Image (tube, rainbow, N blue to C red; front, top):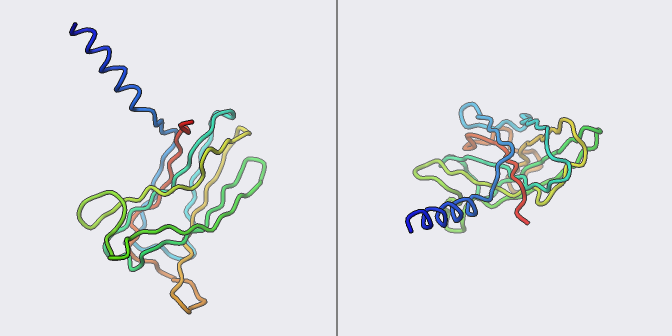
Length: 161
């Protein structure tokens, strides 16, 4: 009976761990300040060319982040030289100012959807570039030094279909 319960527990445990992280990396920002011209680059390779993946951009912010949203510009460069560029907006706080994301204290981590069910059809090195595109209302110039972002990263997982 005890072996049967152990087997059932093991099957449930293995089934619940269906998110498989394939690649992940973080880059820390000096002094929790992200310069407008600082493009963060992440490279990855050796992905199954038939598998579908989900890509996330991970952002860690502290209480000094002065906005409720975050605008990012991303460029996914393929081994063939193709560039998939996106401008993205993410909500970072609720209307009452409560930070979204996980974490306690002044540091929060947000796992933001970037690409869903993407296939990397060719083997080789892919490069993901991430920069911020924040602006103050009514100001054409971008925010030069974005405060409150401590780390930026990415994560690739196998898609759960």
